Length: 207
Ligand SMILES: N[C@@H](CCC(=O)N[C@@H](CS)C(=O)NCC(=O)O)C(=O)O
Image 1 (spheres, rainbow, N blue to C red):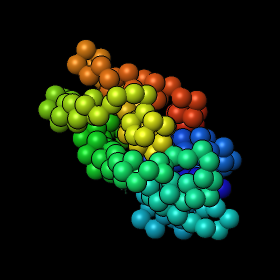
Image 2: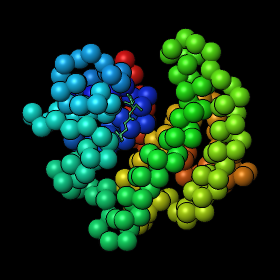
Image 3: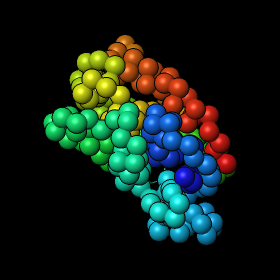
Image 4: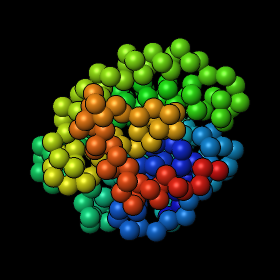
């Protein structure tokens, strides 16, 4: 299986972590979004990352790819079997993309992508506004949802993968979850990003 996308994308990280957890071998091609690479563009119609090519089966979108991997290699299960847990796991996957990534992406763009990758100044006021105003309600919610080492159903799964993945981007932007204010969230983020699959995905080539 070929996986397209730079490892600094949280959505690519989701796929790399799921593959490692399931022990599926792959070749990583760390292309940037919208790269002019014909094979990548064939796998990703909108030019977004990640995308995969599995023996000619091409698919984009991290959630769709994780669904495919789950059916391809059901063990270890990353989607809970129990209906309510399965639905909550999907909720957290959506929450990570729609709520968390949107707010946290501002901090990552202004403090990391613009100065480090695009070599233009970031808007520090915008980043600080996201840190002070937009992220705390999301952290409050997540802190209220954590009661053990895993977000849903007593086992590591897609909820943990999807929600933890963007927190590495926050680290790249020099923001840590304050353990005094959000003790459960800070502990869960540290534990999850320390899993071997996350450590390997974070160390995967960015370019
Ligand atoms: N829903 C998609 C989102 C993918 C996505 O937005 N990736 C970003 C990089 S983190 C991208 O490729 N952006 C380029 C663009 O929107 O043109 C997924 O889960 O894979």
